[in-house]
Image 1 (spheres, one colour):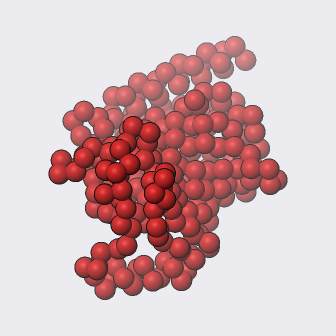
Image 2 (image 1 turned 135 degrees about the vertical axis):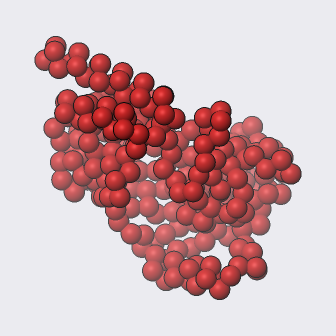
Length: 250
């Protein structure tokens, strides 16, 4: 047991170093090797049923996996607002720099169903606008399919300012959540399809006191997420399309 513990500590340190060396890219060959070495040493047999270990406010320490982003020379990641939030919030083309990504996982009191929210703290980087700090919260739930795989479903999302942000400046940028009248026919058809298939209710009016806008999905699709490593410090997951994320317990 002592030998295994030491091996795990070394393997976790190797993984952290590999992530730091490549900007958090879990497709890097050194990161892949470090994850494979650590996976063999996984101390948790049935992670989806291990509530005391599964529950936490997890911090993403690998690179974000939203589509279409870029990494700047300072190591930060930039995406458009639309790419981070299912193209739900306007203006979808606004560029934002991600500060950090959190995932609170806690029992919801309905069997083994847990929260599976993805919280993205960001800063706007458009020089023509005031610098704004906000939070996107993609709302989700998860429950065990078996000992190692979770079923995940997203139910909606919110966009809100952080405490440091001026509400008037925030409202000027995000107050109008109506899609542009210049949308192409393809974009309009996509929007209609999402409303029909997923029971999508797009953002409407901003809460003028809090600056929050929100959307809901009443029939969102269900996905699968495998937990390939879990202990007191780290959680490593693999999505259906092979995306691997490494999180650290807060």
